[in-house]
Image (cartoon, rainbow, N blue to C red; front, side, top):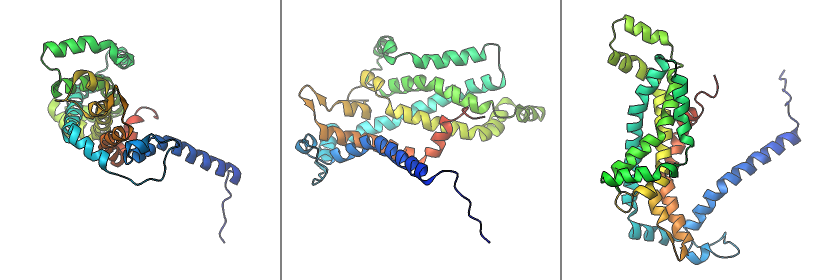
Length: 279
């Protein structure tokens, strides 16, 4: 005999929660959906009142973005700066997190809190000294300047995330490796890296997304030569006004790669965002 389990929630409450969840999802998706629609409109259709929901789509905006701005150049700069800044950040953050997790000192917590507090400072507060340093070093409008700045701006987050992951690795495993005669490099390569690969991957993925989306430093330290996709989008703002259709097309082309990337790596991104939240 089959016994049906009665739901703990009344059907009315369940329907209300479902409707609320769909409402929130549609509210969050609406800007992206409207951006997608506008990218396939003409400029007149984009500013039409009331807004047009039924229209004949056109690819003219995408052709103009490529012909006017060389989308592939900006996309290449975004890929290079985001990937290399993430690699550089991990190379700096991993040893720091390792030292703080396994060789805690009296001021380890204070240093971590100080590092995290630097993210609370507005970026514009450091603009003038960083701009002068880049200018004196002849690094303005170069990929190297953006790589260094992106890596350093994400470094506190990287250290905190890796520290949260490393400190959950049992210290006894590393002590056993040392007792077996493992050197520091062997301990890191054969023990720490395999156990910490999940934390390294999720940290790298998150900071890759943050570097890709970084706009402030891209707009102030680069131009046509080393500009990222954020610079491309900003170029469609002019004294005459905003070209909504072309701006939407450029924005869609800028976010499409990272949206696809984030979709396929969402599990690792969520894992990285929730490190240390639940123990």
